[in-house]
View 1 (cartoon, one colour):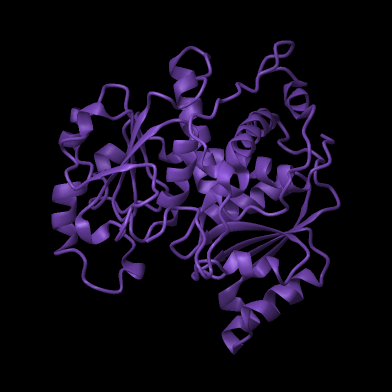
View 2: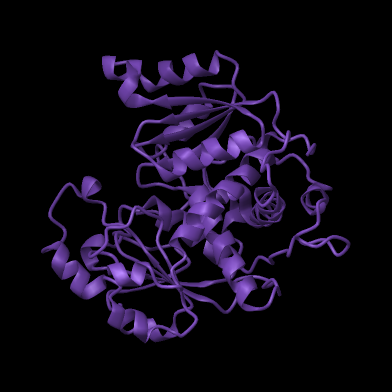
Length: 365
């Protein structure tokens, strides 16, 4: 198993900037206008420049500076989301296609909502109602969609590296919405933004400089998780100390090159955590019996009420969804004030607005 963000025969090419550690976090709040100001969102977009890359396939494509820019833009669009009419003409005349070859609720609806709030036109493709069920290849599918004159293609596919291949076939910008067990970069970005937001609220509006000093545990099916790979890159780039927690059968065969430590003992890590990030057990990807039972997994690795009580008083609880209550997390813990699961979904819209604007925007609000 290669380090997250590195290339495979079908994976995404690495970017040295994606491995930089200790990135600073800009607050994104202009001194002349507070977050509630009618012009705050516009002020945050001043100085935005088009990115050096046209696609977002991996967190490594952004690197430190790109992550910082997405955080800054997300602040602008968070202000937009609070308006009576949460819509701006930033992408008027642009067309965004969502191409999902796997089922999705949060990611697809989040991207489509983000595009519409930017005034882009949206085309929705779902494999179950398309010519793909008749045997049409991925290449023919995306070339057909691209021929309709789109500007960006948001793609989810069961094969790792599929979005990279699509960049060879289309002229549109390609955004990876999850490819196999490889990466899910926008999930990592919204997770970073959610942590930043929660810490800011707890510090009476003081935005943390970065994630230095934070200890984050990612718990669960690391082996099959594209979310884990993207989050490792993003959290480490922002200076966090990341520990992976999983049974040996759900841990990658090798962690060489990963900026993490690893353990199979969840209980020994709880007291030192600032964030505990739980992953879904991906039964559809297991392919073999890797767990004695889901009940035993919950007993050893689920976030029960007793384990939640062992966390720091102000520790944050996160999950990318969909949650399997009673397996990865107990129902009562999922609904605790420390749980940011719903907040992650909400922030997914503003962060994906920022990503679309970063790749396609003209700077006009």
